[in-house]
Image (tube, rainbow, N blue to C red; front, top):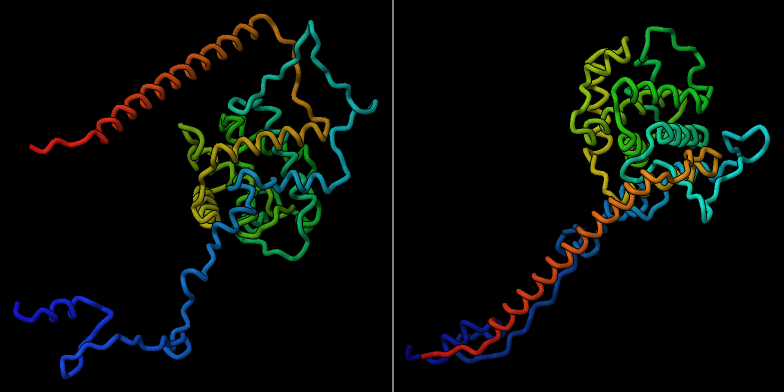
Length: 335
């Protein structure tokens, strides 16, 4: 208590005392480099978040990155579903007639969505990279056949037609009673697998990759998911152990990332529609009937009422927040 300098000196990091209790300014020691200390660890500021950088170029995670199947289809000059008499004439709305299709982003048309997804898989196979990417055993149809029929020796040489892909996907969706939304999520998982595991979809592995993607998509999207044993009843010659191993390895290759944001889902939906228009696979258009117009008007009115309720609730919250602000800044009276 009697020494007035002891408490001040001991509490100051800038000053220190010598043996004669005289104060002198603190001289910081020179900093040692990483080589001098033997520590070559990278500073946290020098590190790059690899996951975030890769996500910007991953179409299955980033909503503004173009889908792989649409890019592959645009590099190909071939157009499927050409009409024999030339390009099909499109129907346009007029003052007396309005043409609409029954497919929306929330309720896509099942048949045409499966056709579009099959077409996207076709372009994945047709325009795949031929740089010798690895072929995982779990997806190899020669090692894990889906039927007892003998797999041809040149099974990995011939690309399947779009109709063959469509029949395979349609059979699974029809037997398992899956929804059109599940087909879009299936395509998201296909492209995520291609990006994460650097695997190309080819003639030797497309069936098992599609099967694994459908298996995961049905469990993630549908409330009443199809069990693995149910697929064994659809594909009679596959075992439950094979289905379980396919699901396990598919999840590991996806790094257990099965989340599909709504923005990514919407992007895939509209890119599939663009793909269908480019290949003359247009969704069926029907004249707007009186009943459908009344339903649309009812839905629009319901959405408008919900929007007004949200605006009223937000206005009430802002008013209550203003009141809290007034109370918060009112002067305090100390008695």
